[in-house]
Amino acid sequence: MGERAEVSTSPAVVAKVGAALDTVTGALEGLRSATVGVEPVEAVLGRLAETAVFALPDADAVSVTQLGATESRTIVATAEAATRLDEQQYAADRGPCLEAGRVREPVRAVVGDHAAVWPEFTAAAEQAGIRAYLSVPLIVEDAGPGELVGSFNVYSYRAEAFDPFDEKLMRLLSTAASAAIGNARRWRAAAETVGQLETALVSRSVIDQAKGVLMALHRITSDEAFHRLVERSQRTNTKLSDVADDLMRSVTVDR
View 1 (tube, one colour):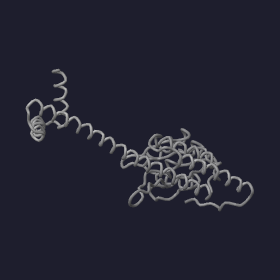
View 2 (tube, helix red, strand yellow; view 1 turned 180 degrees about the vertical axis):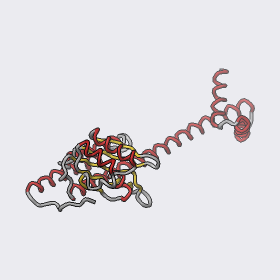
View 3 (cartoon, one colour; view 1 turned 135 degrees about the vertical axis):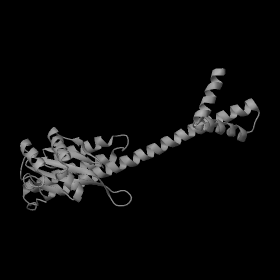
View 4 (tube, helix red, strand yellow; view 1 turned 45 degrees about the vertical axis):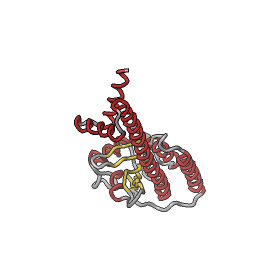
């Protein structure tokens, strides 16, 4: 959408390309060395948004949109103007940041090119002085077809901003952002599993201790002690681990 002339090969453009590639390469190396899970995904996306500002000379504001089933929100933004423009699109349920997600393709154009389609966004952008925009979808490639999670949005005060090279750079950064989101999800899932295992181990330990107490007090077998715990759990509609914990607490108090 809104395609413009291809990138020229003038010395200035070559210098721009070299500087942009150096910036993006540095950002990707930093992302690779970062410990996902220790650093919040918002912080990673914030760094990538700042990288886009440095890599694209015409980028004046960058934001990352998270598309939800019922609502969308801006996760990070380098300027308040970007957040306000994003929110205008969410309220109207249309605009480039949403369109990029819906068509799963970059949306690059001059403000006014799609005034009839996105009147609310166009009016808000013109009022803010924004003249051009570029939105790239964020797609997490896990198992199965890629899941759309949001968009990477760039705004500029210059109508001539954002050529095909800028679009390719943003595609690269959006891939890095999608990887960060996917890694964070996997880390959280792993952390939840570890937490569940730790809870199960603690519960098992308490139950074994409670069984030992019952065996010593009533001179019964391990199976009989466990049966008593289960019977009390069912009768009181209480989790087995809580029954065992209550028994251990009572024994401690009695002492």
